[in-house]
Amino acid sequence: GRREICRPDLAADRSTDPRHREVAARLGCAASYAAALETRGEGRFGAVVWLYDEPAEPDERRRHLTRLYLRQAGEHLARLLALDAARAALATLREELLPSRL
Image (cartoon, one colour):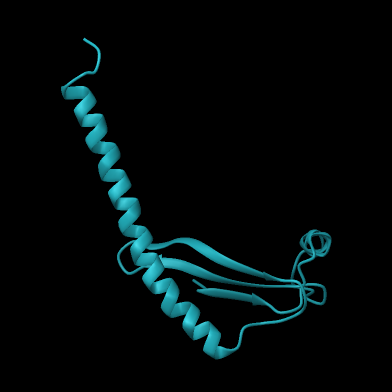
């Protein structure tokens, strides 16, 4: 799948649904850039979106920095999600084995 989507001029982009263009205009968004948030093991689990108030798009240097940052952020967030799931499972196990109310 695509790892990034860039819409440098939402008002002029005819591939975007007219309703989306209208909502973007009402919100004051003239351009957008989205990049996937993913990990090597888990794959894609989210996205990061930048909205611009005038037509624009990030240059290659900024896109490269974004990819580097998102690689680290994706791995970190995946670890936090795994930790949260483990804590929830542990709490469930604890409650089943040692009920707080007898």
